[in-house]
Image 1 (cartoon, rainbow, N blue to C red):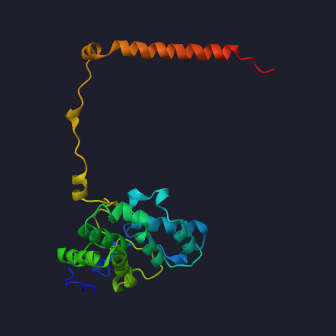
Image 2 (tube, one colour):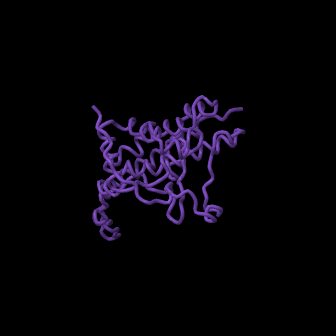
Image 3 (tube, rainbow, N blue to C red):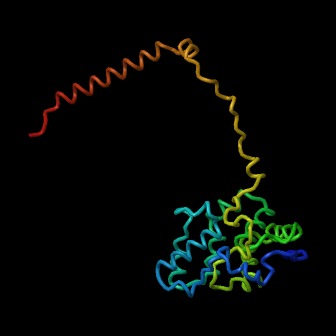
Length: 236
């Protein structure tokens, strides 16, 4: 039996404000990609690129991360933008790049930013949804976010998710794909493991007999190749 979602209280965030008045008219307002507006191949490509930018983030928009089958289905209108986003978040490439290196708390933060267009309200919300990842698994967590009332009210089935009501903070698309705990597990650099080069020490410690043997072998090989080339009759 699946565990119910723990209760938490929403907090005040920019995305909960319906309008900032004149601030919404500035160039900071995001461009919204809608499927009905993609009436040409180039516009559809732009919509697809915006989806990759939103889900994979700015640093991971690489050719081998592309999901060709999903792209084809979207171009043929066989799936909605909502299901295209779902497919990207459930893809093997996304799992390897984002899910595997992170703990559940950071996954909640990343996916709220990328799929819902906002940060988690609080630590309580992170904990509540991290329990859902552990209990139901990754795919069910993705489905819960994308099928949520919040997602459908904000984006529906035809709009690429975007960072809602961003003011001065850094865009979510630049959030690193892994956190400090993963970075700290990487091998630490050891700058003192190599000795600085010193010519005098090099001349003393080098095995010159072995170096001479290698040089003689190379010279002999080059000479043999030259003789072979000279002895081969030219065509015509």
